[in-house]
Amino acid sequence: MAEDPNEDAKPTETQREAQEALEKQVAQLKREINKINRTLAEHAEEVVEEATGWYEGAADSVSRTTQALRKRASTASGVAQENPGTVSSAFMLGAAVGLLLGLVLVAGDQRRERWF
Image 1: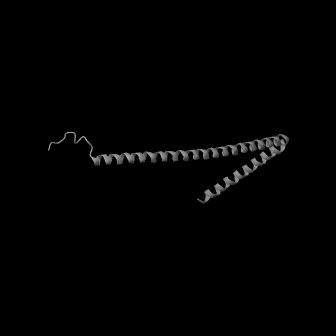
Image 2: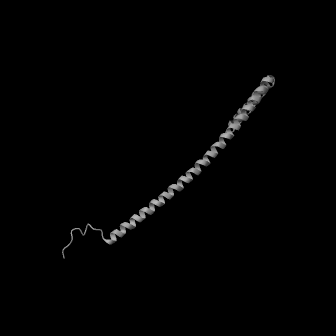
Image 3: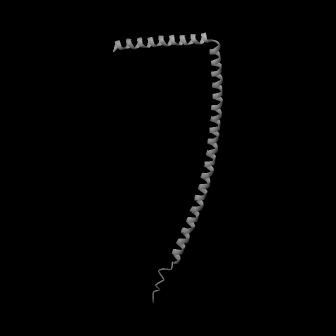
């Protein structure tokens, strides 16, 4: 029997079957990857929508807080302009309380040092 030199070049039946099986697996993997990509894209859209909602809510809250602070600052400024004596008295009282508190704390530290 003479051997055919092209016999090794021709794929055998099992090689063809193996190649077809691999091609099917590759095609199936491509479909699964596409499904995963679509799912990830959907989740990304949901996350973006949720983050946008959080941002808009935070921006609204900051805006309302800023307006309230402006109102209060304006009111405080008006009160200070109408009653300068009251404001200066409040500052003097605060300074006196702060001074007394500082003296008490310093005296407490000195007593503690004597025990050590």
